[in-house]
Image 1 (spheres, rainbow, N blue to C red):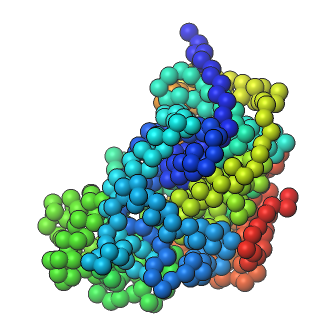
Image 2: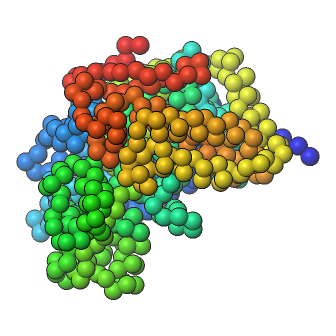
Image 3: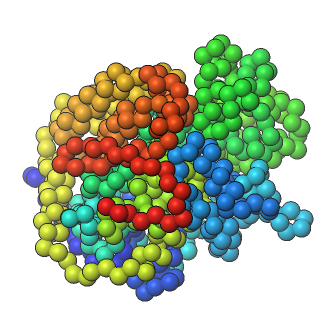
Length: 561
């Protein structure tokens, strides 16, 4: 018997796709400052979704005493080697402290010294007890009467016509129901993309990665296929992490000022540089030169600092604390081994994502982006996601949209629903989604600069990768799903493949090495001043067209196209 999905239509003023940090804060802002109705469509459950799901032990973007938002802009632009939008950085940085204080009012525990000042961790960070950060934020949203939360709803396609968004289409993971959500404005806050490359840990432990494995690049893929302009996908992010657990290194590096050392005990970070990408690059080079393994020098830090580290990791990476206790190799007794992760596409640490104006509206009218999915604003972290959610929300409130439902909407939604039913009713294919995903990760790892190649690539390899990814995209059309959960997996694979294709195009277009490891181009190993520009792309008529934009220093940027 053929599967026929039940269909529901929902009408709302604002649709927020993704209930993570940015999405929740945007929804709360709209509810506080207007009477507009908001629907949040969340693939998981709002209480524990997004990058904050497991907690966090520090606010990594904060304007401390003696510092200014402009200082933060200078730091972020330098770390990104010039590829950053100063208008986006400044507008976010001006809100870092205010959104932090708002979270404290909601119940977030921020550590303070004897004088009542926030406890600093480095120049731009403050310490928190953030295991419950996301539940606190979710509760603040759930209490608003004009916000409707739809958990376990997987959005797959935006409803866009004549470069204007009017909603989105998705399906329930719990019931055989497809949803057509009509909205005057849409905010995409789905996060970045993990799982494109072969991960550090294989098999059963493949989920132990730096970025949440559930973030598949869905928001990117929807935007790409809708013709939104995207930016800087070649500025991949590779995290320097603690080996095996893939726990954060900043807690140690900034918490106890631990230096990076090789197996001989030599400090190597000054040799290669201390920007985010250079710290990874130095570790890769030391290992390649036979000086590994590499470590954070913690041996001899003392029992008090050791206890602080053991407690700190309980707030966001308890597996690291358990490893120390289980093995008896606590940080005071032994240096902590470090490694690079596989590459990710994430706009919270690099500039990858939607090309937005200062108010976070994309090049598609009525479509906004905030958080990791928004490009041009690197080093934004959690407070940047909160700030961008607020900025987008306030602009949505300010702008009045047309009411009514255009005739084309139902036809477009019906086509998406028909595709769901086709996959659900399709006979079992030759390959499974898991097999195609493993193939994708192997291709990206070996030909597009993954771990096995030391993050290096050349143009011939990239062209091989592109051909293979295109082949997998064709094969993905043969996939079937036995239930709604498997239907989600099929779409997650497609999303990753679409993002992979864009990443390869962007890597090919930037003919230089601007960030070691992040885009280590062996054909063009040096930085070229001619490429201190944004590499952007637009999907038009089935072709990804590349576009170069200048890195203008503007206080306010508005789309002219």
